[in-house]
Length: 214
Ligand SMILES: NC(=O)c1ccc[n+]([C@@H]2O[C@H](COP(=O)([O-])OP(=O)(O)OC[C@H]3O[C@@H](n4cnc5c(N)ncnc54)[C@H](OP(=O)(O)O)[C@@H]3O)[C@@H](O)[C@H]2O)c1
Image 1 (cartoon, protein in one colour):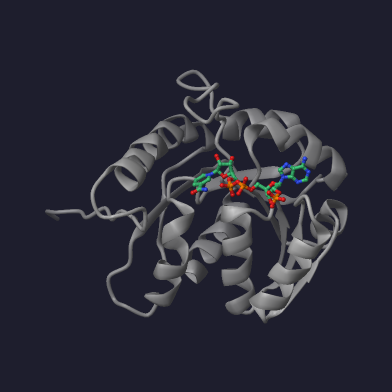
Image 2 (cartoon, rainbow, N blue to C red):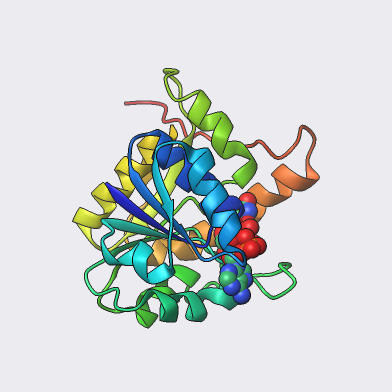
């Protein structure tokens, strides 16, 4: 797949690196320094390059939106026409000081994003895990027991693409349903963040759902 990274920070930098190592063509974009994007592309060692948000989005089969909520409008503007594109978003609608969700309960960041780009197909994924765990999950990807990763969206074919990208990182994708379920996923992330950053044992934390009974 061709994957465009919009926001090459902790999440975008690591996920793009992992996808390049998994064999995808990755374009890293949207950081404050071009050198950083070029270094990410070099270090990823696969088919990765640095580009503008427009270049990252243009040819992409999927784009990852991984910017602070306050940068969403700017990066979307720079990306240009996203009609028909699969947008996988891990961006949470956090306040400027990252202490609270500014959208919740009656909507979600993912739903508000879908309103901003109504012709794109938005899937919410990856926002429920800390960036610190991503490389560890990738390294453990051949183990039988994998951590879960919830995702949701309204379009079946784009959810398939997202599920593949989730598997490629080493998670077991858990389809949580339509995009409005992001209303529950986004606050769940604050619990995960509490455990990761305030709990014992460090931030390399993932989660796993298990079913019992028939
Ligand atoms: N970090 C996590 O563990 C985590 C987990 C779940 C969800 N999330 C969500 O994922 C999203 C991304 O988080 P993150 O931690 O990856 O953020 P981050 O590390 O701050 O990355 C954001 C990217 O946007 C770039 N950027 C910011 N302002 C810019 C500007 N004015 N012009 C160009 N580029 C600019 C940054 O550039 P620089 O590289 O130059 O700084 C960086 O590459 C957020 O919505 C966050 O809530 C994060």
